Image (cartoon, rainbow, N blue to C red; front, side, top):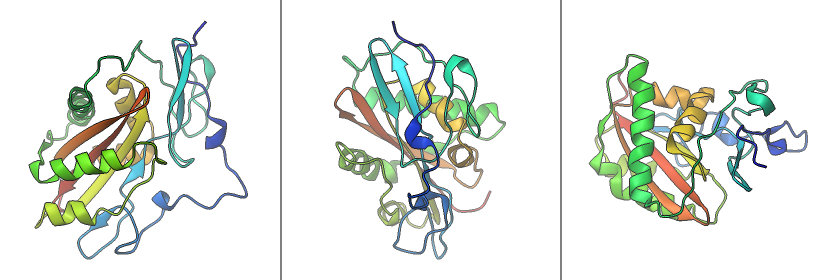
Length: 217
């Protein structure tokens, strides 16, 4: 019998032998994410670590071990937010449709907080598609955002949220909002435009939300 609530991910617990997650620290030019022209700022993070239980399968919104974690029974583990999952299957789901729904869900979280809706970022569309495709079968890790800044010049700032999940896109957006770093990206007034892309990855969809702006909010 499936558990409709998210379960704690043991991999998300502190490991004294593990290196600190680079997504939580400032990055120098050319070394990773996030990026502002001339400055490196810690604004792009991976999606919070959740194990999602739906139907007979247990799948996950996975990252390198940082972010929010969910505990059984709808209660939140320290530093995280519980997520009650909607029934969902990737069968017959088109990645482009999922990406549009994920953008709409994240957009709803942003506007609910009183911020202007993101505009479209067509400059980042092809780059987002390439970044999602590159993550298929690979660890959910950020690549440097230089390609985004190049494609979207003269935009000065870029950030990215990632997810890999067999889950309703609204639940992915909820997970992002339960993780301080991802929430910060969604609610950053300096990031004014967005593009999303997803790719099929087994029974899951791996997605990127690419955000750009002029760096003034």
